[in-house]
Length: 178
Image (cartoon, rainbow, N blue to C red):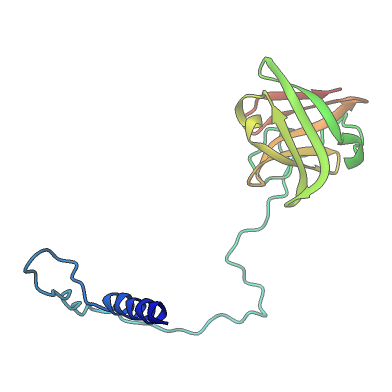
């Protein structure tokens, strides 16, 4: 029982030493509080009536609908179909493709796994804009390759049973074949 009382007493002493006040400063330092913050001027607040949401007065311009050269349009614009473009289905695009672009070749893989507004895809061994490819989609007779952020980087059209031709946004020709 004497050992139990000694152990209990030691535990009480250790607990009380943990309650002692310590100082973060060096020897002889005083407790220094931070200076109070100074008041800052507040700009004036204005108010006005919001426009009626039922009226169709948009602050945004209309979406582009004009045609441009196949594959050479800036990101986000519609491109007119190539005159000889063949019909394409999403299912026919799935799988491995050999890519030729700017004098070099690489591999592209297309899946039906959803990723944002398109399907997951990627490249291996490619150069330039195609290194950023992360997804793709079929829009009419057009295959749109997109970067990882979902912005179009290239547009292609089916020109034969196992061949697609088009260009990147910077104008580099791109061909897919099996």
